[in-house]
Amino acid sequence: MAATLDRHGRGFYLVTPVLESMALSKAAGTRVYMKLENVQPTGSFKIRGIGYFCQEAAKNGCKHFVCSTGGNAGLAAAYAAKKLGIPATIIVPTNTSQDTVQKLEEQGAEVEVFGKVWDDAYVKALALAETEGWNSVHPFDHPLIWEGHASMVRELKDALSNKPGAIVLAVGGGGLLAGVVAGLQDVGWQDVPIIAVETKGADSFNAALSAGRLVTLPDITSVAKCLGAKTVCVRALECARECQVISQLVEDVEAVQAMEQFLDDERMLVQPACGAPLALLYTGRVQQLQREGHLNPDLDSIVIIVCGGSNIQMSGLQALKTQLGMK
Image: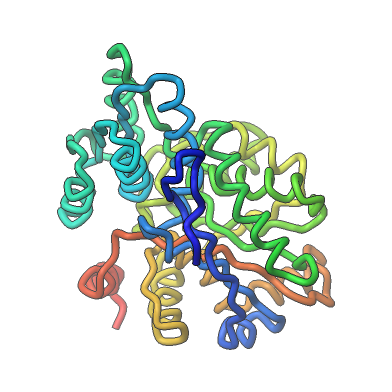
C-alpha cells in the first residue's frame, strides 16, 4: 500500500485494500468486498477528508487547527497537523477514553475535555477558532472533507472489474455518506444503491429522512459514540435525494456481536460504529431488503466500507458486552 502524497511529497492516507470476505459473502448471500479503511495510519477513513482539508487550510495560511471530536476525526486532524508542522488543539467530550486522549497527545496535539457529547465540544471548538489564524476542522461537514473521502470510490473503480450492486456504510454526521456520493457521481456510478446504517440511539439520519428535514436527537444513547452526532449535516439529506440511499437501523447488541464475529472471521477489531454496517450483513438484512424490493434480487456483489476506528481494544469490547448484558 503506497501512501498518497500531497504536492510537497508528504504522505497522508493509504490506498487501502479491497478484499473479498468469504464469511461476509456467506452471511449476505452474495459476494462481499471489504474496503479496509481500518488500516489507514490513524485507524479510520477520516484521514482522507480531514487530511485534504488541512492541506488546503495550510496553503491558505492556517497557523493552528482546532477540532472537536469523539476520537477518529481528532486523530486525523492531529496526524495531518503534525505532518504539516502546524499546532493542533483537539476538543473531546467527557465520554472520550483516556486511551484516545493519550493517542492524540502522542501526535503532538493539545487536548481539552469539554461537554457531554460531540455537539458540546463543537461549540467550544468554534469559540477557539475565532482566534486569528486558527481554523476549525469540522469532523464531517465541509465540501473539502467530502472531496477527500470521495477518493475511496475512485479506488473501488480501479480495483473492481464491475460496479457493485450496493455499498454498505455507517452514518454518523453524514461525512462518509457525502463523500461516497461524491465519489459515485465522479466515476459515473450514481445508480449504485447505498445502505446507510446507524445504531438505535444514534439515528439522527434516519430521523431526518422520516421527517423530511433535519432532526436533533435529545441525546445519544447508543454505545456507538462515533456515530453520535445529534444532527446530521444538510448534505446528508441532499444525498438521499440525489442517489438511492436506504436507511437501516441495528441494535447496539447486534453491532457489538458483529464486532466480535468480524474479529473471529477477519482477525480485525473495529469500533461499534463500524460494527453497525457489519451487523446488517451478519443478520440477513441484505436478503430482507432484496425480498422487500429495495435491492436487486440478483445482486452480484456488495462493497462494505470497513470504516475502522482507533478507540477500541479487547478490554473495550469486553466492557461493551458487559454493559449490554451480553455473555
